[in-house]
Figure 1 (cartoon, rainbow, N blue to C red):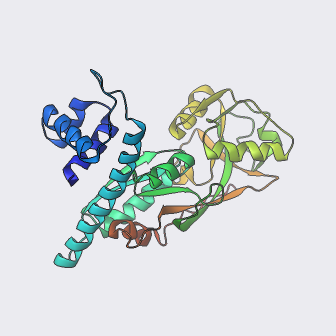
Figure 2 (figure 1 turned 45 degrees about the horizontal axis):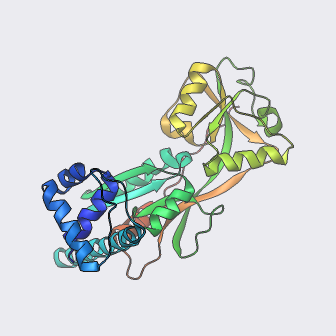
Length: 303
């Protein structure tokens, strides 16, 4: 068994297609298939479900894939640390960051801070649910998560709080509420809402807030995209609930207004999480260091 075999296996899991996986690894499809068969022989277990196309992994294959992720993650961390010690130069490498949808604008401030300190680091940012983030961290499919710290179990994780998420009502300029200074959750429940889908932790937080005022509104539209929320407020005249800082980062939109939600005040802790390994990857440490001092821009309050 060697590192390349594990890289081919992970590529196949990612691409779910032998030819695409081979292209991603810059080898021929017979080479990739042959090396995975050799890995099966070395380990003495079938890894891939056989067929004319890729049909998934066997139960043994799923276990091998988890180990492959962990081994490759440690191998990459070792290379990064040795390269840094040898060259005493800037960090280089690739980082995958899983981010809950409500924190996607915020993560741009963190990636900006990383790039300013470590321009040689390449980044992939993925929109994921809080449950997906924890699962993919445990499987070494991503390096870091930006997620809720007080709503999911994060035992065994290194965690760093970044900001408190508070909520506001997003309405179009011609909405009856557009000139108000704030809105209650009970008032918001009576509006034509568009919200994130129920599998998202943000949506579960919003549903709990509504239940706390004895409301259970049924949204007119559900989506897993925060950009789609904003688009439907602007184009359909719907109303949404977003973190207060959103428009401060995305920029002013003259036809959209945000109104703080009150009664009750709802806030949740959002921060970075990573598997608490020893030693820990220099790249992962660099993200935690770069994120220190990053916080949402001050929210402008209407006079």
